[in-house]
Image (cartoon, rainbow, N blue to C red):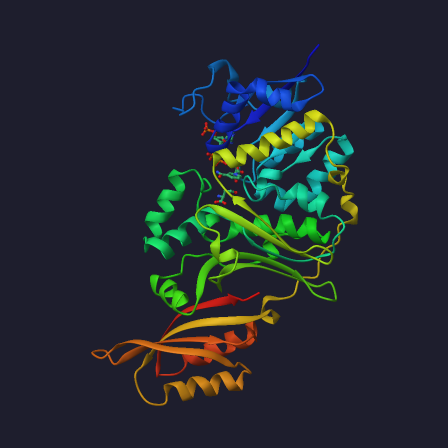
Length: 433
Ligand code: NDP
Ligand code: HSE
């Protein structure tokens, strides 16, 4: 005797279409995984427009434009939210939980901004709110973090957690592809957000690191408090010089806890050693490296975006719920989540890569050296290249030893007041370890 578990999907775009296809075409397979003689049945799908031409055709009787057909249907016990964006997704998740439904979401924006409140609603309703797909696409990361790494005091997370930007950076680095062309490819392959600004400006990665940091450090990190810099200012010259210096350029999301428990959380492009594990992550793949007091370094890597990997994570959450053996740690008491002490970006330390155009005259390097010395910055390497004799300018690439963000910013401001320095083309942080 089977028990029927009815599922409603909110959204039928890139991800929702694949989830629906799996639940329609391979229903028996996924039902069998659910155990307990339960049988999954897709009852309704919310779309914005019934008339839209869709690549995967679902039976029309499954579609609705009215969210209440799903949220108010007592037969539907599990909701899969794949609309994306803050609203109406957040409201629909809240209504679903309050209506006694379990919720699975791929929505990092909603979890990053409202996760604490929504988890509390889920606990009060004795329902599950699962979000494995919200970080790392198909890479199992939320479950391993809260279950398999539970014994560890996590002190650092370093991650490539945006597939679109990693795809773009890989294409720019390996094929000299133009930024816009690479972005267009990422969009057509279904990696990018509906508005890719969130991808290329680092906002999507900030949502994801805020989710990971909140779980890893037991704090409530709001994404607006994270320092964020995207990849739009990188140029082909940066890739060329980075390679010459032995680096690749990656968009990194970094969260670290110091001995006093203060947190440093930031998203920005970074030069990483070309022999490192992070440098080898290519295309839409993601990698998340945790440092724990017991485990040491552990890295999870794999497909970070795209409909199939994301559907893998969503359906795994679905199977977990139907099995009824979801981890008790999801019922975390949110009242215990502290507000973190975040270190201001100015006091964060790292090494830097600078690309300057200077007037090709004696004394330039001495002047730069004087300003660095005054600000306590020590030069690690200098390359002077591409002297344009006609214009009398030269390109100067400088890498520094560890310095504070504040000292670099003060030095850069002083450079701006010097006639011998024509322009400051790039400032990229170097992430050595
Ligand atoms: P899409 O933009 O492709 O799809 C969104 C869907 O939601 C569409 O079917 C749309 O309807 C529907 N929709 C939008 N607004 C409304 C509304 N107001 N009411 C009802 N339905 C609405 O998004 P994706 O599938 O790419 O992403 C979905 C979620 O998954 C996002 O949170 C995203 O961040 C997340 N995600 C995406 C990954 C990816 O690789 N793409 C990977 C991991 C997570 P209609 O079709 O009628 O326009
Ligand atoms: N737009 C996101 C990315 C989808 O490119 O990583 C996966 O969350």
